[in-house]
Image 1 (cartoon, rainbow, N blue to C red):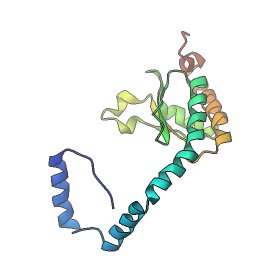
Image 2 (cartoon, one colour; image 1 turned 135 degrees about the vertical axis):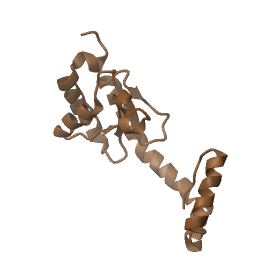
Image 3 (cartoon, rainbow, N blue to C red; image 1 turned 30 degrees about the vertical axis):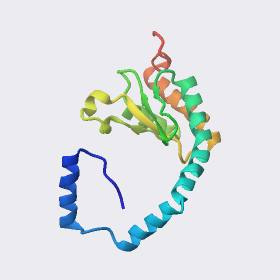
Image 4 (spheres, one colour; image 1 turned 135 degrees about the horizontal axis):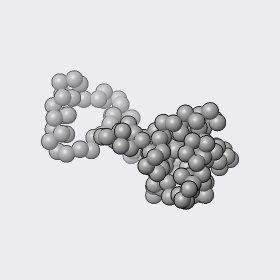
Length: 160
């Protein structure tokens, strides 16, 4: 089961391609999803996730605001990650390697751009599986990694 949001012409092409590969999803799968939606279980799941993720989202927002002012693209609550954009000279791949040495995993974001080489300063911080009490220490370690590579002034946005 799935869905696609795209221009109408692309959707039409994808439907034609699907017809060649698979006529339709199995009926039992469609029925299970229909029951799941009709009984409100999807809404209940979303509410439970919201309750679980909100404190983590708030903790990450506060920690990022303290340690990386101006770097975060904080979403309206609803996602499970923050996109970060460092100064132009920051290389997120280098930062990811250094952070990993300190036990912190970040996801370099250059591969998400049409021109990866021009966007090496972007990375993503996920929080959905991070215990609440480990978020602040993790961001502190990330700040340490950033400072060791690029200097404190780059992280804080102050002149060097």
